[in-house]
Length: 397
Ligand code: FDA
Image (cartoon, rainbow, N blue to C red):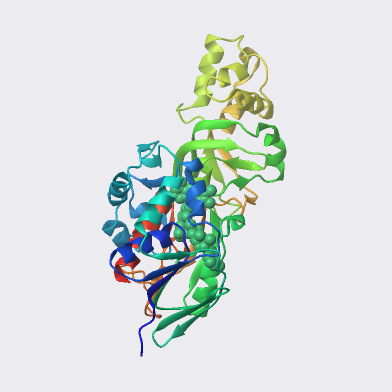
């Protein structure tokens, strides 16, 4: 039996696939990367507002959601954020910490794509290639495409999840998992804006564009303190995106709780004190000391607490304070895969080796990146998973 021309074919030229290709090719492996897109690393290019939040200084496995919360530990330990920072610096890419350990390029996210391409220079990267079939052969795998068939000893599935289909994202990884008998944890859009229910939509419709820079959003045990943004259809901003990964649609009895001015222990007490000190002050003026002006005005209207503080009974002040600090929101849904930064769920880690990302039931098939049921919080964690899981597989090819 002759050995196949490639040691590995990697399906998907995103962050995980390209990084894995660089690691394996750097070890002398003959690597072919196939992708149906016209350009590699498209999600990297658009990430982090064009500056790519490429990792986070505080990565731990607690920053990831997975049916097995321990699965990511090994890969994250073997290729850390510091390893990637060293690589970024080796390529002369200037970076900065924005907030909460989130590292961004000073320049453009295209620098990260170029870094990956430079590292993978010894691999063959073939784009614009439609994959029509994948089969197991005696010597490994055969990948049939609209540009011919390719054989390899090993196969790496790095085609990501279905988030942002207009960028070429597909559920291909799940179809292939099904073909090879790997189980899939039900996928769902995550890191996604949430949409209001009917009554909330009417109440807050005119607040689109208002940003609350410091808010606490909680759901069950989860709690995130970051910015919140009102949109035309609901809420977005980092704190909402984070909580969206935990929010279960249909769990009506369990609303999302918002505190839109967490800097104050108790807004009600602050309003009462203001009423005593400045009785002629308009409540919206007082509220705007703690909230964006448009939101302050709208909350005073919704809480039936308009006009001078002196004219408002404490119960009205309480209404407004509760709206601002204890808003129980039951979203109607989310903006779905069209706007989701990532996909929750994916190929079940129970069927994969945490050391090599190899499928236990299908020797020499590896799965990396977002296709796996490992989903990071917002803040550079998802790219770190792409690098760490790509490294784990790249070492094993
Ligand atoms: P990825 O989706 O990147 O790559 C998969 C590749 O497979 C693509 O090139 C695709 O074309 C190809 N493919 C798919 N189906 C195929 C098929 N049927 N045939 C052939 N090829 C196929 N994360 C982070 O840590 N920091 C950040 O700043 C951001 N910002 C961000 C912004 C936006 C708008 C989005 C949508 C996402 C982010 N993310 C992020 C998340 C991050 O982009 C994501 O987790 C990684 O790109 C996942 O890398 P993968 O390589 O696994 O998949």
